[in-house]
Length: 443
Image (cartoon, rainbow, N blue to C red; front, side, top):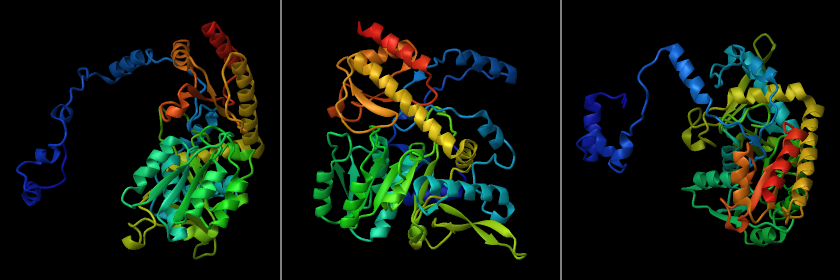
């Protein structure tokens, strides 16, 4: 291990802790985990390594994906990453010396503008680590907006992975988290929500739009309730869906966040991704992360600069709103390039194609014996049930299809349920082939 301290520094620290050697700091870790065998081959030349990994890559199996649950296999135009490979953009970090990076700052300013247009909000920051951390940071910001209360209400229709991140963030705050169940529509139970709001002491309400199941939450009714009980609302939104749905900002939402992976970023075996974060102008000083703004230089020319940095590194620690220290610069720029290339109509076409193909697939699956229990309206993602789901999924993987995501892994109530997603990337031929293979299996 590399320790950037002198032997004298280490000895003083160990003495203070009552330890003899540095390894005692890790005595709680199983010995076999400390130095596990790595099984690396002998050193190879560059050419030998290239051939070695080419051979390894042949073991990969390409699956046609009908899975979503927060990460979607969408078409990424080649020009997106061709542009981002230019020297002006190819950095994952926002420079601290803002005056030396006008091009990057201008691009981030345009990114913020597009996020505001999508969400219907007034201000957006220069991106977050991912959608899950953006949601958790938004709940903490809602606490600052409300200024009182120790309860957080979360719809059970929120992505369970996002919920796990939120619970981690809230450790140490002493907050009580209450889950609000779903209705027969597959959306938040409004009656149950009002019952919890009546109890008081709520400083944040978190919902997803469309929700984890793919159904469109009744934001109008939710906002009426949160206004009645004066509780800040955080909405986790799907950016592609916002091209065809009423933006959350138009209902009076306080904070809108989400995951930008769908906007020009490949799946990448699970990341890195990028979160977006937007709010009302009146709350701008409570927003986490960084904001790029427009000012004038000494000659009166337009200049871009970082106008707010709310990390404890930049201001007095006790006044910091967050410890978020950076943003996903390169991936946020990927979102910008993607949205600029497609434009409003192009993004809407992505949504419409995804929806029409999802409906086409669902009709075929219902004919094959799959069941739909919820009655809500969805876009390109929805859950279905089948008594033989686990065998079907394993057999479909053997045939080259990733047939959705099992919901029973998160909730025993949903054993035998599968969450399916169909993007614009799936062709009619892909769907017909999937249905044909399923029909053969079910016979």
